[in-house]
Amino acid sequence: MPGKSVLARLDKAVDDFCRRTRYFREELTRGRARMFAMQHRLNTRQRNSVLKLKVATNCPDWDTRIGIIRACSEEVIADHAHGRGRAHWEILEDLGTRVGLTRKEIQSAKPIASTQLAWSAWEGLMANRPWLEGIVANTCAERANVPGYGTGIMKKHGWFGLERERWRKLFGLSDGELEFFELHEKADVEHSNAGWRAVERFARQLHMEDAVVVACERNLQVWEMYLNGIGDAGDKGGVPWRDS
Ligand SMILES: [Fe+2]
Image (cartoon, rainbow, N blue to C red; front, side, top):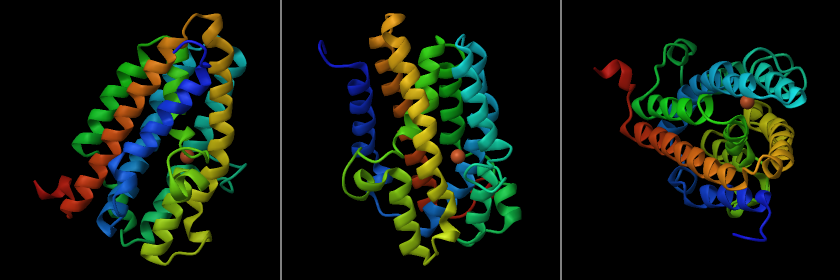
């Protein structure tokens, strides 16, 4: 795609992801929301305590590296800027208790097969690839929380803006009870802007424009599989790791 900036091509990949992913287009159900709370709590912990830190380790640019570690710390240790000192997975755990799950149920949840597959795929795409591809991997799904991609509510308020709206409708929760989504509308704009800026700065310098676009597309395919997996498992009902 000669003449198109690398950021425009990355934005196109994120826009495609937002438009095609079944999980965004299909109706949210109680089963899906509960499965999301359980799986996404695990996923947040895995990505921010393992996967994104591998990217930081490989990153030679000091400011970018510190930025990744700071963002990971907000996610898994304490977010003082947006989350009143709590980790994001703790805030998600609180949300789970408001949609019919017990804290024990959330805490004893295991990764379903599609979540486990996503982690294995991301291990290959984040730990064993050039660092700039890793930055794209860290950032591309958070980017969907920035308004402008997809259609409808998502285009206007971002992915978590859409989730906030449909969780509010389905469970009758207040804005305060839905803080998990609201805080990401703010935190992810900051985190993903930092990532997108780093990619813009380094892709040309390192002759990696095509490589970062391919990395973005592949990472978002994994996200699509991860989210559709949550939807499918949520539809089946029950708690898969206890049924066997
Ligand atoms: Fe988060």
